[in-house]
Amino acid sequence: MIRRELDNEEPDRLYTVTRGRSRAEDEDLDLVTLVVATAEPAAGMQSEHVRILRLARSPIAIVELSAELGMPVGVVKILVSDLLRANKVTARHPSSRARRHQLPDAAILKKVLVGLHNL
Image (cartoon, rainbow, N blue to C red; front, top):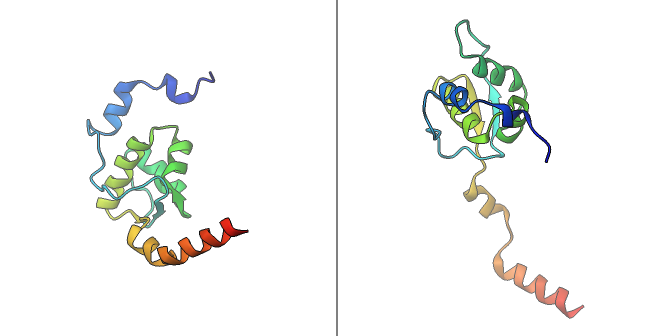
């Protein structure tokens, strides 16, 4: 087993970073939610927030932020949620409704499947 940086992470530090919270306020945040910074880091900001703002100068997914920060996805979601509330970032959530409109009708998919089985 390869030891990752997270394995050495103190649970107390993660508790402090999230101020004891275990869930993000924005429940819509997903692994592939794209985050984009809309503000520059300000003096006195939490260092993890500053790092997220710097990484999110161009669109970056939550899972990529997690990898870059070396923190669990749940912790990153909490931090991104903080930045969303402060209007420091925007997030484009994957929309299941939009995906449903992009997919072909189920009847068409069944016809394609039958056609493929007949080959």
